[in-house]
Image (cartoon, rainbow, N blue to C red):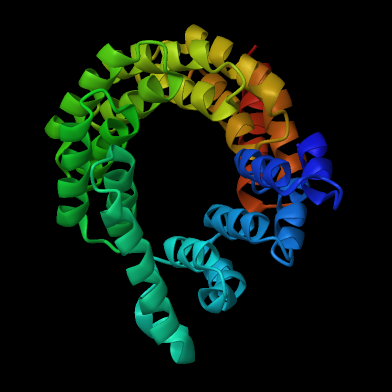
Length: 311
């Protein structure tokens, strides 16, 4: 993200390039070197840069987003106003106080823009995301279905609709959308990951493990995918495979407490106290004095002492 941050923050960079760099930086949030140039770009006199920076605020938590994005509801440029409305769409209108009218007007502008593009699947996707943010899930479903009617191979609508069905408790419908999407994009790791998580929720662990394994293979740099794969393997008591998956994960995220705890669990579930000890020790180090990890370590040390005494 460093090169992108420099490109976005350099006043000599042409606006179109700076805006593109800001868009790419979104995938690096919440890293400081991604957030800092985005916040700086909010002050830009160029409306394209300003609108892109406001749009990037969707990556920050809602409670912070409110104070940072709200002033842009009154921006003189429509593109900036509607980006502010889009990223704030999930907030109840009452929280805007004196700017409630500005919010409602900007949201109407955003909706009108999408309706003017109603012959494109992207416009219906955008409306569906807005309705999802507003918890109007039935309306969101209709917009996703319309996007798919317009473009049956439009993967983002299928994936989002699957996730929406999951949220609505309609997992059979979600599964149908994931399977349809995988037929169209059999090499898209995100699809295997989302579908694998869905089946894991349903305790269909064998199928889930297979999908998550494929996701980890297609997206080897994503530690969280390997971590979830290992958790499912543990449910299946396939401990050797779980350990192998966790070793890859820890190479990517050596200081992540969740990941280290998973490796402790792999060994403690097999009563491998000696193998668990270094990971439990590391867990205490990264948890900075938290009570839980210290108790886990003490418990493992007791088991080791008991095993020594029994010899």
